Length: 308
Length: 282
Image (cartoon, rainbow over all chains, first blue to last red; front, side, top):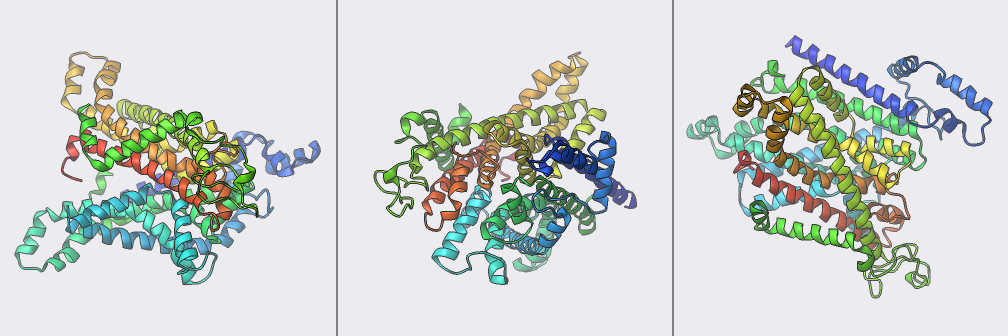
C-alpha cells in the first residue's frame, strides 16, 4: 500500500514537472519576444534590454527554466502585462467565487447525473430510459456558451426567475451552477447507467433479493455503492473539462471568478494571466486525479492496486 | 455498405446523416446557395434606429449588427466551421494513431515515453491550453485548426494504444511472427486493418469535439477572426446585444448544437455496428 501511494505521488510530481516545462515554453519560448511585449511598442532598445536582464532572458536556457521553476515553487506565476500586478494575486482575488461555483456545479452534476443514471438503469429500455439518454446526449453535444446564453435568455430575461448575472447570494449562483451541472451530468448519467446495469446482473444482488430484502433497500445498500465507484476517477478527470467550462460560463453570467479573469485576459492578449490560469488548472487536475486514485482502493478494497 | 444500411435504419442517425449532408452541400456551394454576399452591409438591413432586423422577408433569418444577412453568413460560416472541424480532426486522428500505434507496438522506453507524454497532455484542460496557444500565435484559420489538433489527439492515442496492446497479444500476431513476418508487415497488414473500425469511430466522434472547440474559441475571440464568418464568431460579434436580438445567437447556436449532435450520434451508432464486443451492453 505504502509503495503504491509513494509511486503514485512520485508519478504526479513527474507530471507536474512536465506541466511546468510546457507552461515555461508557452511563456518564454513561443512569444516572439516577451521583453518587447512587456515594454510596449514605444520602448527604446535600452529599455527592452533592461527588461530582458530583469526577466533573466539573457541567461542560458536551463538556468532560465530553473529560475522559473524556483519562482513557481514560491507561488510566483509572473506579472500581468496589462495590470502590472502579480498573476498569483490576481488569481487569488478571484479564487473564492470560482470555488463556490465549482462546488455548486459539480454538486449539481453528481446529483443530476447519478439520479438520472439510476432511474434509466432501473427502467431499462423503457421510454423514460430512452428519453433520459437522448437528453444526456444533447447535453454533451451542446457547447457551454450556447447553453449558458440560452438559459440566461429564457430563465433570467423572459421568465425573470433569476437575476441577470453578476455576483451575489444563492440566487445569483443557482443559474450558472445549474448550467454547468446540467451539461456535465450527461457523462455521469451514462456511466452510472451502464455500471448500474452491470451490478444488477451480479449474483450478490440476486442473493440479496432472495433473502427477502426490499427492492429499494437492495438498490440503495447494494447496487448503488458498487455502481458509484467508477464515478470517483471520473470527477478527477472532470476537473479539467470543468475549468474550461468556468471560462465560458463565468464570462456569460458575469461571475467574477478565475474564468472571467481568463476571459478578460484573452481580450487583452495578457498571456501571463492565461498561462498562469492554465498552470493552476493543470496542478488542480493532477492533484484531483491523485486524490481519486488514492481514494479508490480505500472505497473499494476489491480493486487490486498492484495492477496499477 | 452493410454498415451504412444498418445506420440509416435508425431514424435519429438517418436524420443526422441528412443534416450533415445538407451542411456539407451548403458549405461546398456557398456562393450559389447564399441569398446575399455575407459581408455586404445593407443600408435597409438595419432599422431606422440602427438595430438589426428580426427574421422576416427579405432577410429570412434577420440581419446582424452591421446590417449583414444572417442566413448568408451562416452558410459561409458552415465553410469555416466544417473546414476547421475536418482538418483539425484529421490531424488529431493522424497524430493520435501514430503515437498510440507506435507506443503500443514498440513498447519499451519509446512506448512508455510516448504514453508519459500523453499523460502529461491529459493534465492540461484542453480549452485553456487551446486558448493559451492561439493567444500566443495570433489566430488564423490554419492556426486554429493546428491548435485544436494539438490538444485533441490525446484521447485517440490512448484508445489506439490500449487496442494495439490487446491485439498484439492475440494468437494471429504470434503466428505471423513465427512464420517470419517482419514487424512492419505485422503493423501494416495485420494490426492497422483491425484498428480501422476504432479509428473510424473516433474520427467521427472527434469531429463533434473539434466543431465545439472551434465554436468556443471563436466565441471567446481567439478562434476565427472576423470578418471571416464562423458559427462561433457570429455569436462572439453579437453577444452584447443578444437580449435585444436573440436570433443572432439562436440560429448559429442551433446550427452548432445540431452539427455536433449529428456527428456524435453517427459515431455512437458506428461504434455499435462495428464493435461486436459491445453488442447488447450499451
